[in-house]
Amino acid sequence: MRKIYHYYGKARALEEINLTIEEGALDAVIGPNGAGKSTLLRVISGLEEPDRGKIEFLGERIDEMNPHKIAKKGIAHCPERRRLFYDMTVMENIEMGAYVLKDRSKYKELLDFVFELFPRLKERRKQRAGTLSGGEQQMLAIARAIVANPKLLLLDEPSLGLAPKVKDKIFVAINQIKHEGTTTLLVEQDAVLAMKVGENIHLLEEGKIEMRGTKEELEKEPRIKTVYLGI
Amino acid sequence: MGVILEVKNLTKKYSGLTAVNDMSFEVHRGEFTGLIGPNGAGKTTLFNLISGMEKPNSGVVRFDGYNITGMKPHKIVNLGIARTFQLVRSFKFMTLLDNISVSCLSPRGKKLAKEYGIDESASSILSAVGLVDKARIPPIILPHGDLRKLQIGKALGTNPKLLLLDEPFSGLTHEEQKGITDLIIKLHADGVSVFMTGHVLRELMNLVPRAIAMHQGKYITEGPPEEVARNKIVLEAYLGKGAEDLA
Image 1 (cartoon, rainbow over the protein chains, first blue to last red):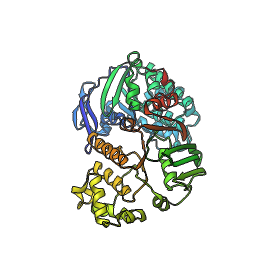
Image 2 (cartoon, each protein chain N blue to C red):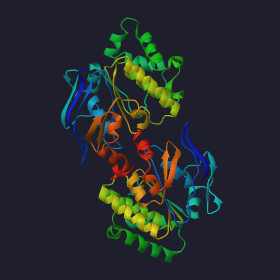
Image 3 (tube, one colour):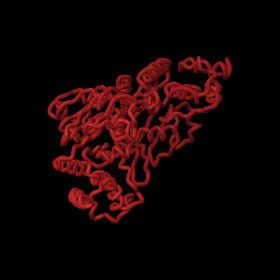
Image 4 (cartoon, rainbow over the protein chains, first blue to last red):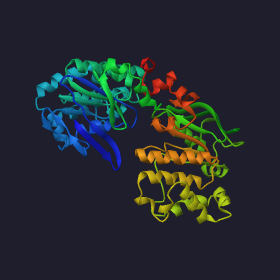
């Protein structure tokens, strides 16, 4: 991303965002409520068209492309608050995620992977998504994104509203996804969790990247607390 | 400086969720207090309980010597509590002056307007909130920052002793936030007790001398913002479990 700006009306949501993600990396964007984290993902997946700037994915401009085309290029967006098809079953939700996939044998392989990652989903595959617990719904949202076999996985706030133990489970899975080699951009308010899995950390404050560095560098940085708590 | 608002063991349950859980605290007359907590902490529910929009399951709210627990909102307004909401609402097609005049017609507002009349009273409020040039304009064509000022103006029309401001900064640009900050400081200096929430903390924590923190419906701590920001549970609530080990 080069010099991305985005506005909602007159309110600036993103300001001069430069972000490069290497293939195979797991980058995490942290920051308090309202910093612009979700907007950042939304401009990548085409749900918002940035007002200025340029986004390239594997060498190709995508910042004016429609979301469905961007999905076909290999970017899967796992949105904030899961956004499942609540009246459909677990299995149907997963199949919806795989609609961009042409190769059905690949689908079988990915399905095995997500069921290995989340055995709970396999047990409940005939259950309606709306009847799952919060943690299971989050697992399903991630599974639905993974079966698209993305080259870049966008995860928006996967810990939101979950109990600490359930959060940990989700983050163990995110770690496994990283080890499988899927390039991932994680957006997360829980800075401690994000820094456990992320290699490169970007701190967002009021639409601007305030600082970035490796996990080790940021752990020593008192500015994180200041950005979150305002003081 | 006596107690103007006392909240004691206040609890509000929804099916399966305790939004406010045994909260107790006090706000003093003339004080300027912040209420902080991450998304979903229960801040707005607490304001709803104080202002009578919702009834608690148990506990007591006392205001200025009266037990106002479970009282209807308009009665609470008549005792001297006014509030603003996170989402701005106004009479979209009426002028700003008329918008304010509506609240000046409340019993406390009328008393205030006795000497100079409703119009005069409403326009002095408009000038206090910095909207007097726009008195003849309807809210529908105004930017968000002006609408927030209008909300505060409408609350002032009822001549409150205690002003509850729910997220007065949300959705505002930097300049607009600054304008609201200046306005709140001015109102407080004029003698109104102010109790305000915010989940975006930069403005709030640098504004109030005392903050009360809540998380998952429960009281956590209170004190000067610098102290509250160092509290272990507050840090965990905002940054995640283990946050105190960060620099």
